[in-house]
Amino acid sequence: MGSLAGKSPANTYKSLLKVADETNGVSGTLSTVEDGEGTSSSLSVSQGQIMIYPNSDTIRTLRVRNASGTDLLVVDTSNSLVKVGTSQVSATTQLLSFTGYRVVPYGAGYHSFVPVNGMAEFGTGAAQEVQGGSGTNPNTSIDKADFTDELACMLFYVPYNMVIDAGRVLVSTDQDTDCTINVHLMSYDMVADGTTNDGNLSNGTVLADGQATSVDRNVIKSIDMTIQSSSVTSGKVIACFVENETNTDDINLQVQVKYHIA
View 1 (tube, helix red, strand yellow):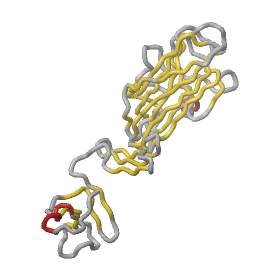
View 2: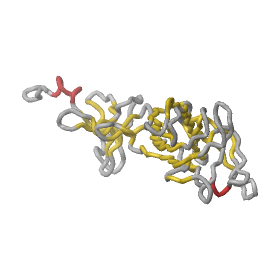
View 3: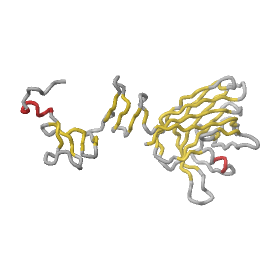
View 4: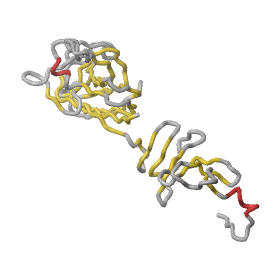
């Protein structure tokens, strides 16, 4: 880095920084920091504020690094993200989990709801399975029918606009027969108009899906889900479904969804 020692201001003014308000200097009002010939920077300052306002958005509008040069804080104005830590994940990253113990399929090829943020045991005297159809994907509309109370434990209400970043599944069954297991993450609109229709689901969208083969009680298979539609708007609900294509062997699984608030 060069020095200004012994150099005339007439030859160095372009490298000097000043605020745009040349009358009041730094005051209580934000003023853009400029170079000596009036070219604006992305920095504005006042007596009580500092603002970064880029002329064009970039993925590294603001960076804070440690002494070894690793980014610890990055403001990405191109994607409206603030990334933190050495892993550079979004500062609003959250984890959502769905867990089911002994999920008994309604029939081979049927999609069954998986409880959210907890583990439920299914069967007589316990939680009852709620199925979401037998198509390639779960049904896009679901009437809660006789399973209103069980369905309340299967849905995650979305309080803010969010983006699904990744999904990971751990799955096993309770028998020796090899099975093909499919997992779907769905978003829905849920009726909440104060009538007896409250809780019915519509406008289903596949957010992510994945498949594991040769699943039996002797293995724990893992699935990296494929993101199909990442954005979910506030007010919707998210549900997870598991399907045993092969038979009706009980399914044990844990689904971890990584997302960030948009």
